Length: 174
Image 1 (tube, rainbow, N blue to C red):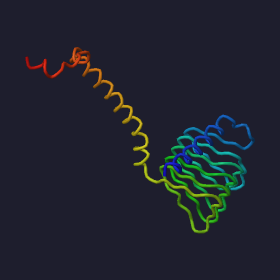
Image 2 (cartoon, helix red, strand yellow; image 1 turned 45 degrees about the vertical axis):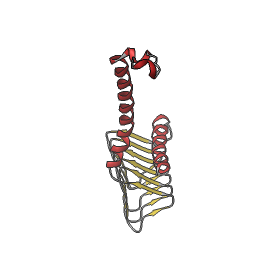
Image 3 (cartoon, rainbow, N blue to C red; image 1 turned 90 degrees about the vertical axis):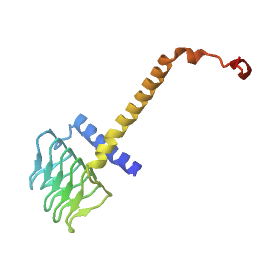
Image 4 (cartoon, rainbow, N blue to C red; image 1 turned 30 degrees about the vertical axis):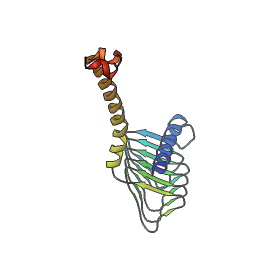
């Protein structure tokens, strides 16, 4: 499970960063907070959408990535690369095809029986585990800080106890 999660997160992050940083290929579309729509006669390359959704009716020669949004492939839509949705769903309608893999992190992959996916399908639905994954590092850090504070307070309350040498038992009862 952990390797699948790591693979999904790394794939999404790499696709996002590389597409945003290198959005120089003709046909690339990168949007933040504004939906991307590829019309039936359009041919695009990589599509990256942060805080918005992607709707493909035409052809995409590259990858499709939506962060905090969904990806919908309408009838006859084609994606030549991978499709990733983080905190959103991937939906394939009648006759749509994806030549690469599909990953939905914090969402579901929903597909019509006539839709085709050539690569692997990874779906980690539900936002509950995303919340857990986000909180665990903070809980561990909080526990570590609490341990340090407890150790410092313990030594401050009785500083002499830390430096006292134990006396042999015969000398204690005199």
